[in-house]
Amino acid sequence: MEKLVKISAGLVIVVVLVCAIFLVIPQQTAKTPVAGTGSPLQGTVTVYFFYGEECPHCHKIMPFIESLKTKYPDVDFQILETWHNQKNQALFTSLNQKLGVKSTGVPEVVVGDVVLIGEVDIPAKLENAIIGEIKKNR
Image (cartoon, rainbow, N blue to C red; front, side):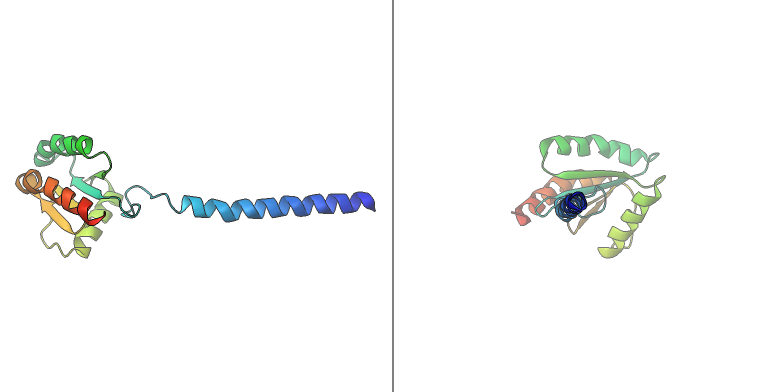
């Protein structure tokens, strides 16, 4: 009988520990953003760069985007190919609908509520949009 009590007490302790672990783990993982979902950590600036694999305009912009990634290491740059990736295409469509963009195309950049389209507007206006979004999040 004493052996049965010890086994039961041991099982109760194991169950309590397992329950405690499952209560702690979700709180820690909930703070980690999932890349590409549009749910960055509070205060983080996310730049969505949408491009098409065969788009020559996109490839002209890519080195500029890469240089900004280096210049702003705390900014979350999401580089998303939309012509061959349905998940990225869905995010592209969703963000444009949410922001009321009627005429879309690649290359396109979204920073906060700023949408820049094309190889002229992106280099001319993207850095200021990033700086503005950084200031908003301080």
